[in-house]
Image (cartoon, rainbow, N blue to C red; front, side, top):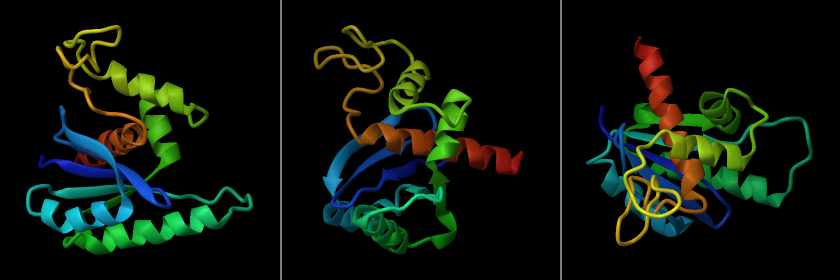
Length: 162
């Protein structure tokens, strides 16, 4: 399986991560314009783009939700292989990683940490410290939800082919 580029989109900046099916190749939070510029280049090396998609739950939403939707569309458009784009809903990430759609962000983060070996230093060896990094070293803030999107997308693609 080729690596997945996953995005947790936001109004002005988005978390991203590249996941190869067993480890995080890279992750960060970038301004949306910078991330948009990298997608066409990354498509040559990475097979799938997975983007967290917004779902309607019948509640009123504000300007930020619509601006995020616009960025989702721009990210998808920038990926040169439309058939290699997956939209992943937050509820599916929660259900896959935690077994319930009621999970909170902290539960999702802990579930992600628990999936990786404790090989680094510090109090959370899956993340580690600079002197002894773990497999999740460098994953922070909005890159955590992006990693959840990547792992859920991988699971969905495997089950689609099973």
